[in-house]
Amino acid sequence: MVPLAVISLKNVRFEYPGRHLALEDVSLEVAEGERVALIGPNGAGKSTLLHLMAALDFPRTGEVIVAGRKVERKGAAEARKQVGFLFQDPDDQVFMPSVWEDVAFGPLNMGLPEEEVRCRVEKALEDSGASHLSKRVPQNLSLGEKKRVAVAGLLSMSPPVLLLDEPTANLDPQGRRDLLNILAGLKQSMVIATHDLALAFELADRAVVLNKKVLFDGSFHELVKMPEVLKEANLELPSFSRLMMMYRQHVGADFEPPLTVEEAFELLKDHRS
Ligand SMILES: Nc1ncnc2c1ncn2[C@@H]1O[C@H](COP(=O)(O)OP(=O)(O)OP(=O)(O)O)[C@@H](O)[C@H]1O
Ligand SMILES: [Mg+2]
Image 1: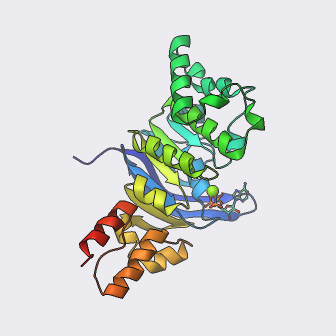
Image 2: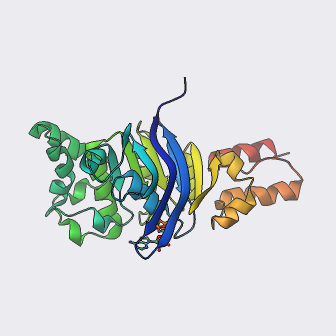
């Protein structure tokens, strides 16, 4: 059975005021439970595309369908309930007087009972490594701390679709790893805009490379064999992949660029002799 498309974009074109063209004829489907990495250079339109999926902006041409309903200005509030949006800039996201209230805002708005809200907030803060920040004023936090709080806000609502704009930017390495593990354990459909290819390899099922238009839509194993697409998207393979490609040339072996450190290790073991 073909999995249901949770997000579907058909021939979407988007211009900002001043006729600045950000997206040109983008068509894309995301299946239920699928994790798609949206990659591309600065200014490629990644955030713009996520904004359209989150009913924060609306295309004049083409259509965006999320969870079975067409995203339009009218009814946008309903459409927004289907998606959890992690803004690229956490300052756009955290706004309540305390971290606790900020994370509780979504579940309270969903009309959940107080006890359920408390449980959700505690769990979300713990999962995002932000429990120690619960009494702080969000505006005074460091960038990485704000990001953790914003992530906790999403986790506490657990919406069916997650749209994550640079989720690991500004996180310290342990914070990045923890977030990766949390996201990997979630069942929701996700679109993750990122420049972090190592994260995309680990977390996502599929790559969509964007530069106003969709340049590539497919598996990472296919993508890493297309240097011209990587170049056009200003991408660089993670160091372990590049190291393995140098090693491949050195020993005259024939394998594909590994996508994870574990894959690289397996290749090394196989080629030891
Ligand atoms: N509010 C706006 N008004 C006018 N132009 C905008 C606006 N927001 C974004 N743009 C332009 O639209 C294009 C796409 O921007 P967008 O933020 O979607 O890119 P991005 O792929 O998310 O980039 P980055 O990797 O830097 O986050 C850019 O050329 C940007 O300058
Ligand atoms: Mg962006």
